[in-house]
Length: 627
Image (cartoon, rainbow, N blue to C red):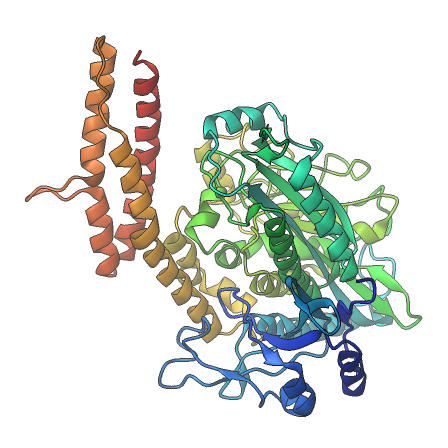
């Protein structure tokens, strides 16, 4: 297996691609990977012989088409205008997906599929997530280079703006996931206790979990991803051992991190990592979930997204544009301050791309280190890098390594459409740099650190954007909402940001790639999934919780038991029991969704969630008091 082909490098000539494929007859198929607005990646099996014969047509986008019913492009590829072309993208790495359950009889090697990142083109225009990021970066690069040339004396930067000839957009993601044995059920209460006592974080892995983790790291390195770490996360509990010595009832949380790349490649790499991890753990008899909040009451799966920006000068050297010239005296350069403020000021219209599902918003609750407030932390002094885990955007610094300076957006999850998030982030960064490029770092530090109510030249007057405190412990919810903005509670509330902040929408769409029809298509798709999931999945699950909260027959019943049961009875009825004149909350929610009354539906969803949590707590107390 040592000589399997795992990667065809970016910008490999067509003749060399053909040569490599002919040298590896175990690669039987190619698959064009387009990313729709929901973040779904396409997959198909095209025989390699067809790809080799028609390679020019594949590059031109005329060899493969799909239609509007196959991808999520609402309002763009419609049923009466559905044709979508799929050209390949030669500027990034292509990866080979091997099926280790299917071996080629001639070569005695696993059958491979060359997965080729591509674009989705409708009516001659690129309309997919990869294209949005690619085209956005082209525009941001052009505008920033022109800006640096026009304003060469940038405070805190080690190079003159006139020396900059190119920019590098760097990014990396961290993947958290839960792993369990199939059909295993574990006590949420027990795992919550384990989490609070930190019994799992950095714990040694065992058995099939250890094997799968080690195999995943080794396999990902074969793709050139340069894995930096795999470890246990905070969630989970200790597995049990059956009579044959195998671990059973596995339920624990893991994380894998790998090296940064340029922004488009980083987003592509993430899809490969998810694919490899899921297949290897499955081969070891384990299920993997990348859901943001697979179990209510326990830590969710985050995907902290790192964002960087570097300049290339005429001498070929690379310089971190966020890093301060004197890191012991300044937190960042003027470019860094502007970029961070651009992210924070415009985050309301970035957030819909970050959290577009019920699941993702379930994760973003106070506690569990999940960020809900639009705020950053710099550290108490430039000499001591901050590590405040309660804020939205972290400034990552290493005084000994200026190239490590970057931002960590902590709100993303493994199913966030990272292409659209990065496109929106870099557009917001451009806006911030434009507004701050002529200011000194002292002026920018004062702007970023201003109190709510204080005037600023860029940031909003009635908001605060920096805190070195624990935003969950040191502020009440009312104080957080007032200082940092009230976070959306539902998908509908989050999508309403596109309507409520039109000036900020103009900023993230200024480059022309994240245009109105893309934003509207993303919004419409997210709301359709929100509505469908509520009706078809979430409400049936909640109805099951209500039905399980039954009265318990007992010989000895106290007045407390009677009191608790009466409250439970009334809650169950309010949630799920209709009468001729009164409709339950469940029925009201379904009706509101069917009638398109989304504001009402959003309010009902929040009310139902609150009452379900109240019911669960009441029934737990009621059940524990029965002997």
